[in-house]
Image 1 (cartoon, rainbow, N blue to C red):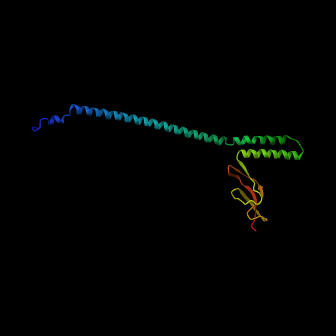
Image 2 (image 1 turned 135 degrees about the vertical axis):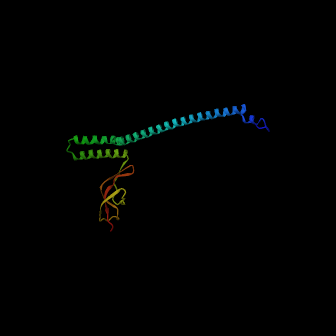
Image 3 (image 1 turned 90 degrees about the horizontal axis):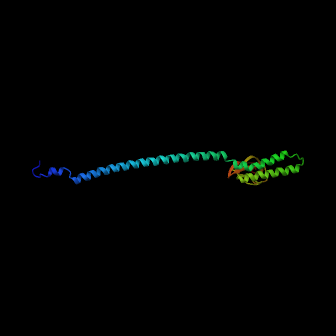
Length: 178
């Protein structure tokens, strides 16, 4: 024992207040560990739920895209049904009157063009003298003409756009440079 300070050994022993603080801090640490473990568990659960929800959204999106591709032409096909009906009616009709036949074909063509218009399909039919546009026209040949060079002389086959994208360019002959 230290003779200078006999209470020194007593000072090394924790007091009851110190023991209580130490016990509280151990409890506090245990509670903190318990709380952190619960937080980790909750976070893992939330992560797994979010991951599963993301996977479900991805699967639904794939299904939606698949259905959109599968049924994309449905409305267009519905617009064409009256045209088909008119064609069958024309075939079934046994008239030798060419004028009536022509009128029937013109009406059927009008129905078809209306169906195209509703489905955002537009005709490319350049007039004579229109400047050649390689984005909408395909030149089949160049012919001598009195028109300005590189202008449309005749349309051999009409082209079509669908939603501003060329489905088929118009086949044209173009004037040669003089």
